[in-house]
Length: 360
Image (cartoon, rainbow, N blue to C red; front, side):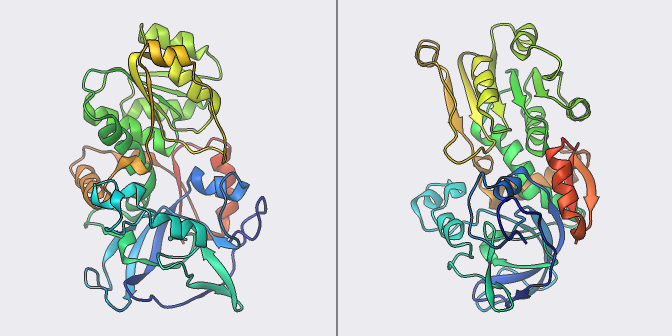
């Protein structure tokens, strides 16, 4: 539980109410350690406090609330931090990552009805993004779970629900057709490495990854990157120009830093597109040269949650994993107990290789 911004997380017993109408109780088997959670811990992003973090998880349904018909106890599920209401304009036009109901959860720190199932000695404790899976159990909306097929380990199902769908989706959904095009990926964390896998699936070439951690770059090469650039030791702009003279058709920024966004924009060839994936501090901005934007017809777009339709895309990801087309096991880093949660975030901010996973 996060009691106040900047404070260490505390592990304690909380009261968890049973699932309400159209909700399910999930026993958490694995939860990914994501930079988005770190943003809330540091105060870069705001949420009601106190709160139980964790938005990337998987587990087994133990109980269902009234009105739940699609799931039953014993079902293995992946948790989604962007459930779809199915009724707002964004859901109807096929952009559920932008579902308007998400604002209810973010603003209230509750579930889709705006209320919480968590409490401590009678005092309200909030959910993060309607999930809160840094816990042994969580109650979520049935709209926030996707079935997981046999053969997909809990750790893989967990990271698929955020890092993988965000990175792979940034390529397959936000970029689309890019066979033979150059793609530069800034950041080799869980999302950036997943974008490498998406670029390989799409047939991009070259696939260039930029990071400051040598071990992360080595992992990127194992996943299919054709070139890597160590930004701690090289002039990134010069290195990219050597690899892809004239610039790349596509750039994905998976860090959320103004300086890397600006470098990514500069690395584009005329007509190229920068896909911004990483989150930064609230209100943070970056500079775009107006004349380069106009005269070279460069584009800057955002991609939230891989611009995905998770009910369609997550089953595809699981199928590709089982078919050996997505080697997601290579993304898994260190496993932690729940009482090692602060160590997990220290490793994350220190440049740990692979996606850390909490195993409650």
